[in-house]
Image (cartoon, rainbow, N blue to C red):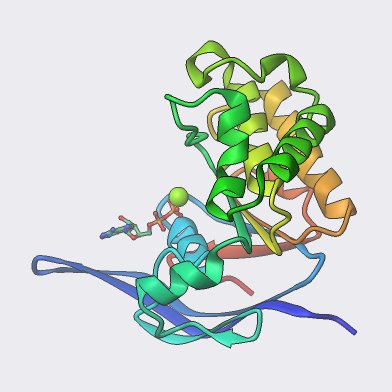
Length: 224
Ligand code: ADP
Ligand code: MG
């Protein structure tokens, strides 16, 4: 039987700053099941990041329903959302978002520290993932000492090391050249082949072609 990871109904998001209201999402209804590899596609400013941030429990909708792993999360405050996403969602962003003062090994280990995994287990997991991602030689380097493609591989390693139920990627290839972009998409595709559930935000058809489902967004609405 299929297992629902995400289910939304009529999600809306209105940003209000001073007297300006921006309607970023209108009536977004979607389902994402375990093992799906879904692209959220659309031009700049159409609401992709807003949607991904809500799906990732980093933000809440203005109205509508959102069930994450069966929990009603649409009205949860930041404290509860943070508890629910802890250890369950791995994020990757366009700008890599590595911690500059930590080396590659320490960046990858960080989520395991937050999750209070014991030292021996942490070491085993980090060494395994460095091997799996073919970046063992980078372990002691700092983010400024490696290329963009390498930084994104580290960021991917950090997103999957704690075996999250969901991986959310917001334009992960946006700062990469074609070769590195292809490499990141192939890795995501491989993770999905191993059963991981992934939602990718992109405006690039070269990236969305790796995905099994594509949801097109225009001006905050799904295009059917
Ligand atoms: P995309 O990721 O598709 O480029 P976004 O989700 O970032 O689009 O933005 C959708 C719309 O919401 C845009 O019009 C943007 O200007 C607006 N927006 C995004 N974030 C905020 C915010 N924090 N406050 C006000 N408006 C915002
Ligand atoms: Mg965006």
